[in-house]
Figure (tube, rainbow, N blue to C red):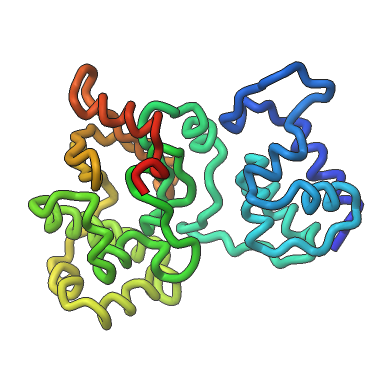
Length: 277
């Protein structure tokens, strides 16, 4: 672990960002450029003291999970992420077609979306990051294990389907499986996609039936009906913005202007998930 270089790199990357770059309100007049330490700490979920010690060359070795959080908070490129891992004394994450490093360009767009549910998905349907409205609709997905993939949860946890009306379940399931097949073709044997496939073949007869249809795609339905436990059905249009290599997608769900769905989304924006918990 190269503490001096790590501290300098973190400080310089923090100072290079503006609050608006990460979806924060600038607030009162600032004495120094860039983000404050407490803002980076909040974005990563670590304590201010822990982050401050990293910049002061006296912190413990950060875990790979913490480095991944710093990568996203500081909007690092893949090359910068690899450099950060090396400075912290860790091996560089393997680059694959299903790399979960969030594309900074997608993050910048997501940071500006406040009035519609939006999230960034990996090729395996992992929610890499989402805004507050998306969390209010879908909840917080698991961060580790097979269950971080939506296709795994769809076929192993019936509660996952509650956010869609019953008449859409078959279509949603087929879309999930078609996306998995496309991801497996890109990642190959021995990948996380392959691990997902083998687990689902063992655990879900329904998955086996859909898998045997041999459908393949990387797409999203243009229209979705969501079901909120208190607000009921919410009709939205679905738009997806892909990275150049199609490995990640920013999904934005927007209601029609002046519709009942728009009013429900506005209510969620004001009250949030906690008001309905």
